[in-house]
Image (cartoon, rainbow, N blue to C red; front, side):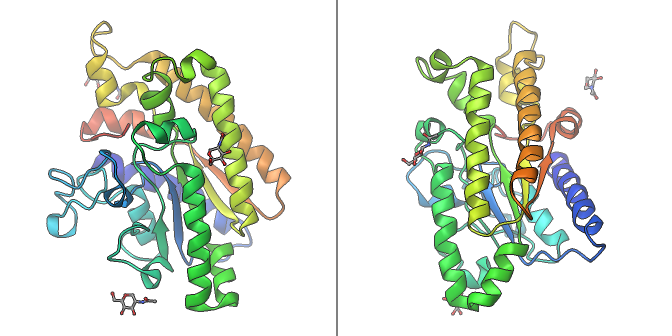
Length: 295
Ligand SMILES: *[C@@H]1O[C@H](CO)[C@@H](O)[C@H](O)[C@H]1NC(C)=O
Ligand SMILES: *[C@@H]1O[C@H](CO)[C@@H](O)[C@H](O)[C@H]1NC(C)=O
Ligand SMILES: *[C@@H]1O[C@H](CO)[C@@H](O)[C@H](O)[C@H]1NC(C)=O
């Protein structure tokens, strides 16, 4: 709970600053469009064959109606709060959920899939939606949007919307450090970080090419302090796993540099690196309420 209240505040601050500093006009964000993992999946995994699901109690306990929607949370997730803060819907619906259609998605949609990562090999572990496929879904969405609101309005929505990317933890915890004979035998942690950062860069270039301009690139949380990592750190007295936290810090530096470079490379882009690291470190300590952040 605590945790989920803190991330959006942070990301929001960054965006309010970014948007208001640019001409001082009020934020115009017609839709929130989301890519990523369980931190921002609102139920897409319920509609694909995978075990990486959260459509059962106690998930959703504090959600409207107490329903387990497929969000990995007791209530709403960060992107839901961000949507509300921009005066849009109270939650961002999952693209694959047949309860919703383009009428709903025109003001917000998530393509995220719990257990996915930048690396195709990560999404393969639990057969979830890879990042490249999320972009394919987004292109399909653009076509539906054009049919629904017309070409001119659709282009306005596409260029003014806020795009949020939140993933990367699973590449390390579910894949690199977990799958025997896999990425760890091919790459050092630093090489793997570079590999992931290059995928992130190409994804952003492709997203930009479809018309997106306001993009938030999320960094990694202190992943050595996640409940599962602490529980299994028996040798270390259930303390945070320092090496995982160091990898998160190094990778965040690479994403921050990537954002600086892409802001120079791509005219008109407003890419912000959103760093949840320090905020989460505190939140996890206070709340102890975070389930399955690393799924
Ligand atoms: C979307 O669904 C609503 C009812 O849930 C329906 O009234 C509306 O016609 C649908 N819109 C489209 C574009 O299919
Ligand atoms: C991931 O898979 C897609 C589809 O097969 C492919 O186009 C893409 O190049 C792959 N990404 C990497 C980094 O290998
Ligand atoms: C986290 O909690 C532990 C014990 O509850 C405390 O010793 C430590 O100082 C706290 N750390 C932070 C950063 O708040």
